[in-house]
Length: 94
Image: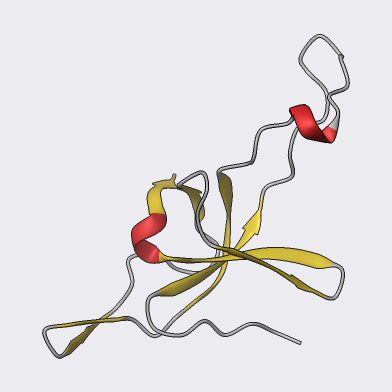
């Protein structure tokens, strides 16, 4: 099964969280921060602005940083993804 986002939506594979600190201390799940970085897996067809379709700025494979508490988490098979609007993406990591 694959995900095909609609409109200005983007599907992100969230980067795995760090479970140990630099000094080797293992952090429990409740102490870990929610990740804000991931890889774009799929993009929608574009956003409609003033009746015209505008393509999205991100593309599949881009590493992005997004807003902390945004989007919808979905699980497909054993993998977890985040679906969010392009406007929730803060930057592309180059």
